[in-house]
Image (cartoon, rainbow, N blue to C red):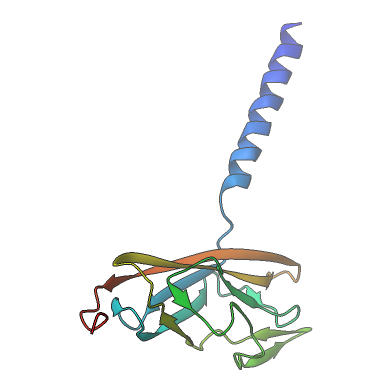
Length: 162
């Protein structure tokens, strides 16, 4: 009986350890996100700047299925022409390595946006996610995503009332 309880406890601990490991976000990329200005006024145009680099240089980002950048749409403080972008429309260059084509991540992405006239004074966030297929050194791949965010500050526009 004691033997069965020990096995049960061991299985239970292994199960909880696996759950804890699954809750950790898989990070394959270093994503640097910023805006060209940290302090903006309502109505002002700005640029969201994104840089990606692999945490492990042996891994690659597959060009198919295509990398997708999604910006959260329910952000009432900014206006974008669109809220999602693909690698091909952003003119990512590709490289060929053995049996697959992968993206060259050396490109800095610039996505223009406008601060809405109704944006309140204070700190605002831009939140998004990168959806991509990572190809590992041994050839297997996995479709995954990583979230990113940056913030900027809106100050009062003294010219708004004139």
